Image (cartoon, rainbow, N blue to C red; front, side):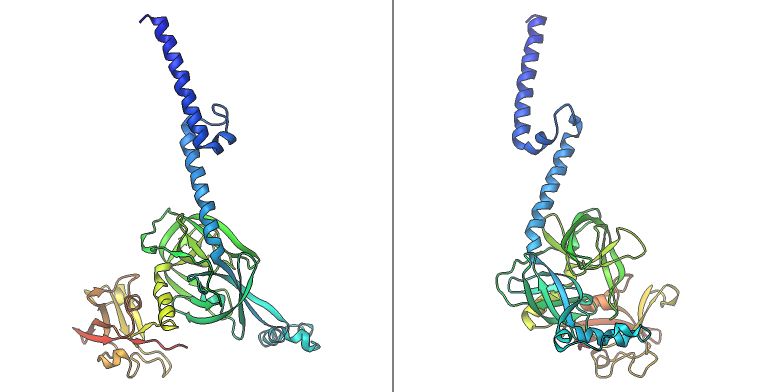
Length: 397
């Protein structure tokens, strides 16, 4: 074949396959072709990147549409008279005009919103998970508002101050419920989406980011009622604001990996969530027992590390009494007392697992249920000993 014919054939083949390629791209990715003119706005080298971004955007839109119906605003309400009374008790120096003593009976009984946050259905029959500090308003009654704007009265089922969670229930059987992920499988850099009642005003706001860190220790709580220390929290740069507390942190499969819980007041784009695996047992307890059952060992201790620990052990939990008579090292007739543990014993391991930073007594005990037997290794008078403790159930405050 002579050179002119060879050149002509190559040109025809290039035009043919180029046309076929353009037709395929136009058929499979019409949005790309509609937004960008080939050879004008898009470098061919970036085409695959653009397609990946559009696919991720589509995935985000899809999971948000799937999960949002399961997310609710949680509202605490009190009568106006109660609000005025509480405000008066907490603000002795406030001007007198703040204390309206001329309320009519109708005005005094009118219900007003005093706090709000976020929650989400974990069962189709109305069980809702949120943060404890969201509902930490003594004397309040609770309501939830769905994404469609429907309002339902809610009953507080139980709370867990250790995990900063609360479970509410509303009447119904056909609510959209979330799917819970295995939060032990998440990785730093993974894309996550937060949904919540931002600033207690903008219902079901969606923000997106990545998992910025794991196993963080943070303090959660915005109300005057106190706060909780959250162990092993997920850190994310997805915007989490007051009002988002109690909402879901989800992955791109639409599964809940955590409960949005706290924000850092010292930095930007620093939010925290409780890993969902930590609360699965509480949900199951409520389903089967009607309340949250926390295992209880019955000791008060000081965690020892570094120079304060007993060589060769780097970590230990020394059973120590507090300043008041009620703060005993070993609670009388409690599980530890029955097992023979005494004040000044230094616990070093549970079921053969020695304590380490981030895995101490409380966490190892929390892996069990009340009634379980655990083997506790400890040091007394310089000697190592071991005993069996039958865990009890923690009493509610």
